[in-house]
Image (cartoon, rainbow, N blue to C red; front, side, top):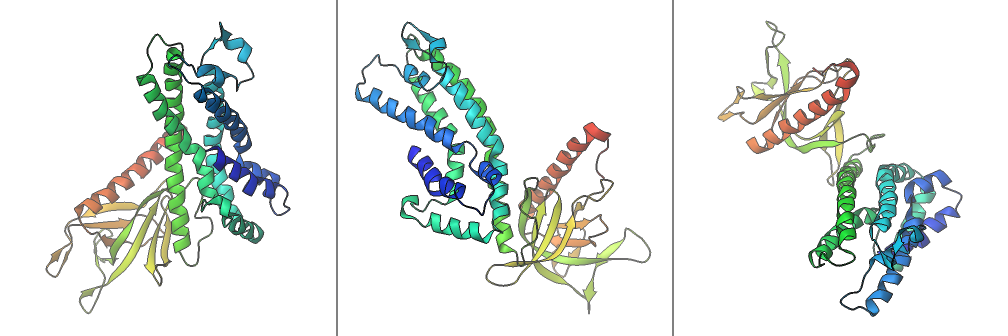
Length: 356
């Protein structure tokens, strides 16, 4: 872990700091507290190795943990020091790192339009000492560290007697680490969502502006059969399939549903997609796209029991999509329901309104 932090700093951070094609604020957003973490853990691992080299049954670790803090004298008593102060400082550092993580990812995405930065990144990541670790993997490594600490700590407590000088401190730290781990799990979901947005952005041709954004979430994606609908003259809500010579117009499409918009894409070549329809999920006034389960449309010898009608906004004409099976259909509708619930919870405290 310390070696990877060293690579992050020496191969990426320091050269970028000496460059002229990236702003200091962008460097701060990307690398956050990387240098503090490196200093922190470098001292820790040196002291830890020294203690292991003279290990015995009643050996303690808490004193070397506290040597990393600026307040060691305030927490010493009879030569036995408690572990929790180390993790109080560790908690503050990692909490800042986790909360800054989305800004780091957003800044990297923004810099993809900087040709000098892209060339630097390719050159740095190809260096042998990186061992095929791209910058993004190195940046996410500290986020992945706390869950490992938590597992190791639980094992340590399991094999530590209650009468041991470190026992109370270890159990206290376990609670603190659980808090950090919960925070990190939330950010892990953010990372996974960011990765999905980047993947989708790279598949679209041409690439849409601003698709990768901190507020945007991928809700559902999948291949569907798409049918256009038309309204009957005798009723505004009476609709039917558009046909040519009695045949329904079916198109194979990729449906992308985000928390703020939907995209219907056409496969072009080499696995790439072109956006054929795009509309906001919510219009001004709170009106939303409607996804409605449909069970009474029939095609020749095929009842469309796994169909969903999409309608509800000015920018999106009524459509019917046919999904692979009932499970996929229920997953889509459940995902849409979550978007509507979260939207309702977000606006209710301010206006008391709920989306249509």
